[in-house]
Length: 85
Image (cartoon, rainbow, N blue to C red; front, side, top):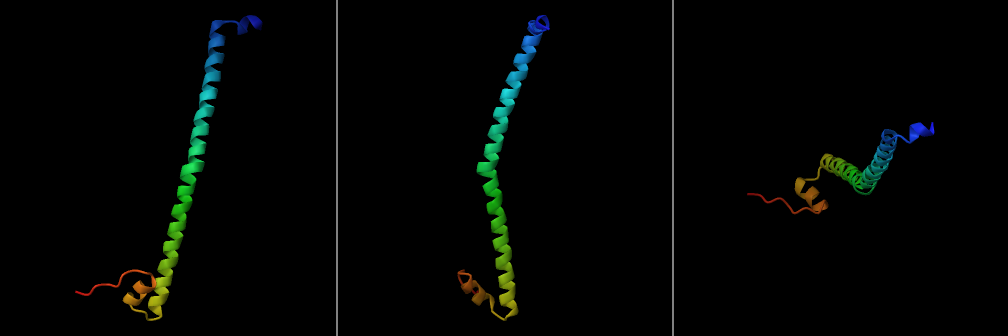
């Protein structure tokens, strides 16, 4: 068995396998930390923005059903009043 392990091809294969394992771990670490630090918060922020927009749209529809004009709704939302031409 020792004779088999001492052959250059086996040593080379072991060295290559260890190098691949080490570099693969490094790449996995880089990708996983990038996802957790950058992409995950970005996705959460986008979901929050979509939920906020849907809530605002539902509120505007409710105000329209209650008879508010678009100018009143814009004022309630803090938007400038519409200009009539």
